[in-house]
Image (cartoon, rainbow, N blue to C red; front, side):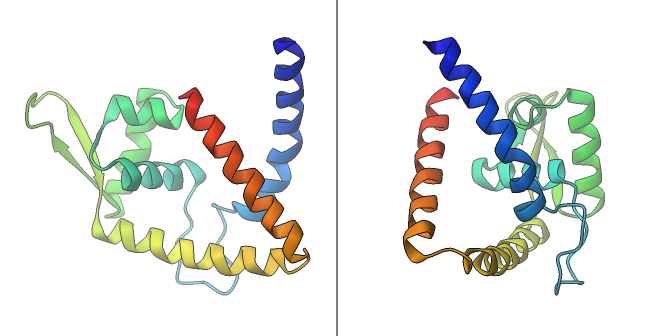
Length: 151
């Protein structure tokens, strides 16, 4: 039974990923009506979101949460640091461990992107009835609750 469930989940993930990314996560593009927002690749955005949620995080834990190699994480963090969106520091207990945190500039960018996303998705949801929108919210909330148990 678990194999069948796994196959069905994979099919659903593969089926929903392209339209979700196309319609709701357009990281490499400047959002319409928001030319002041920088282009931000999705790994960079996800990195900032992880840092904002978890606070200061060491590089190896960050790479694991992003699902990337340590080398790729170093490149992502270097670009964020170069843009003033994140900062590196040494761990207080073990100076050999490098930690990363989001800066005030990074927090402000995330806030702007959040506001823009709310506007964009609000326009998308206009095509749905209130009942359908509530059902979508309930299902996504349930998915997140269950996926959090897998971590």
